[in-house]
Length: 582
Image 1 (tube, rainbow, N blue to C red):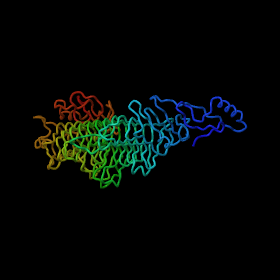
Image 2 (spheres, one colour):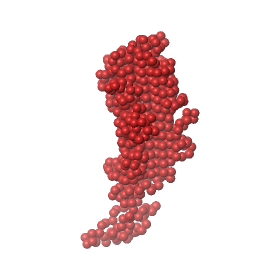
Image 3 (cartoon, rainbow, N blue to C red):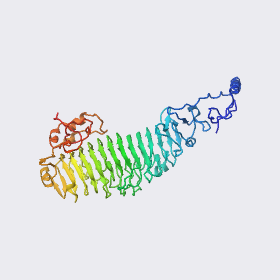
Image 4 (tube, one colour):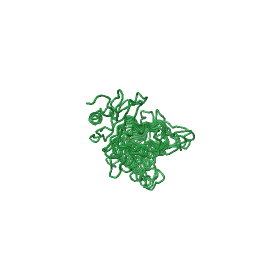
């Protein structure tokens, strides 16, 4: 409805290209009308016309558009004083590079926003959807997505709250980037920051097409994704072909994202639900300084696949670093762990992460497919504390599945504690491994097995060197079909823990039961009391057991778990003491 001025009879119709409005009065008549209005004000209560505020171009050279509960869809939307009132009006806008849609902070807007193939942003001048004024605006979806970007990119979504209703929770994504384009086309520049998304099937989703189309140069940062059904954040793409691997998304960064209470779908037995952060079909991905907790509790009891806190699948060149994943759950007897490198993951790295109190494995490398695609992955300088709280078949670190090839596990610290009858080991190795090296790890328990490598797995495919095996009652180690209670006998009969003629490894007490392990995640450069406790009093006994990684061609990286620079050969565990004990 257009606003009518009672003094002049003019309507608030949109501006022409030159800034004028159809039907607007000229300067001479405007002055006369204003004078008459002022003279009649005392007699008739006539209101003065609202002063004209010319629209301003933003720093990117595009247009600004405003939406406010006090606005009017009959206005032009170009200034806060002439804002639109509804999302429906804003959704009809055809965006151009550099345009900004600004929603009034603290206000709630019902509806959805869609940016489609006819809308255009670019790397230098993206389309921006954001709040203005004080606080963040809320988009409340009713059975729809909150914001959808379809077959286009160059879009930045920031400083918003997006919430769904019951129908959205079952079926829709909160913020969705979708590509159905033909061919292997990657749409550039996606930014999501400062958002809070809840009440949807997935909080934030990037979906690639069947032909391999998707997005590149993606950054999702400083956001909270909670109380969604399937996942807080998920990326996906086409089915994986090991002979011709293709990935929908390229260069995806997830930083400072918290995903919690994404509980899962109790009726979804045919798929995994209830994860925090899931990256599928990604090449060159990074998840850092992020937290996943309290996810997965309502996932289906008979599901064949379960949730994880932070994990990846069908991806390559992924890095997970300086993240925390804790108190994640599963409704079934599978998964529910902290971190995972799942099917068809290659050339990827998990480092400087903390996992504790999860139903399943702290750190899991797993594949169920009979190909050679799960290869060249590394798990190093992580801390796993009291994981596998529900499922005996997991452990602090687990390598499980057919044809895991060139998996390197080194410089981790694992403390496994019993949870009533659940007594999962610090390290579990399952059959059909391709080639796995396990070096310089602290593997400690308060009673459960230190290592469980049971069944008819190929012991020649595993190489153990420089580890600490400490249990409350000795090493307590299962190797093949036999239990070992002392390190020397196992070393002699298995051929493990030797470097040429030199014996390696130890069963010395690493003193972990007295260490207040951090609960907020590692920080670069941190060398405070927790690091000192891990690296000092028991360091001499452990360091004598370690192997020199550099001498055998393994680059340990620049720093240990606490960010202390590495010099020389690291000792044993995630806090790599390289000098004499204090």
